[in-house]
Amino acid sequence: MAIEKTVSELAEILGVSRQAINNRVKALPPEDTEKNEKGVTVVTRSGLIKLEEIYKKTIFEDEPVSEDVKQRELMEILVDEKNAEIVRLYEQLQAKDSQLAKKDEQLRIKDVQIAEKDKQLDQQQQLTAKAMNERETLLLELDEAKEKVQEQESKGFWARLFGK
Image 1 (cartoon, rainbow, N blue to C red):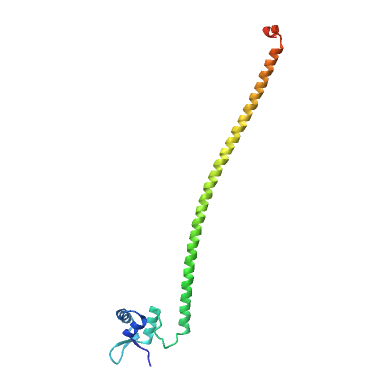
Image 2: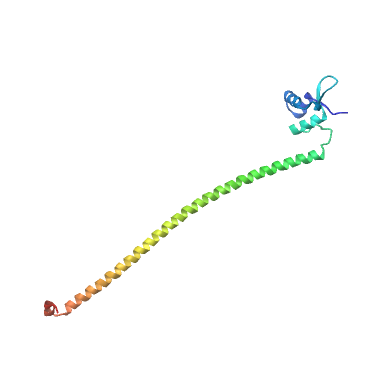
């Protein structure tokens, strides 16, 4: 006995409207449809297989699904899961890349700040060295001035007067 289903039966099995099934059946090749003894259009086994693939539902409840179909469905499920995982990992990778870019920018800013501080420290060291040199020079000048004053005080009145 050939397995055949009418449009109404298919609509009920697949859970879609008769009009939607009718449109799908009209789009099937002529070898996938026939007229029964009552003149009603029915879908043959080859057409039912095509509709199963389109709607991803089993129409042949009384017949076991072939191993090939089971494996194909399992592979589709696995591929979908893997694709979802790939998308999730890709989004994570993009988030990590964004975080790294922000960190790189922060490090660049810190490098500029450190360079500025190094420059300021170097300038401060130069100013301190210059101030120390000037202090030493002033101390030497002060010592020389003190020695002259002491020499002048140690000379007598007449020696100072006549410049000897």
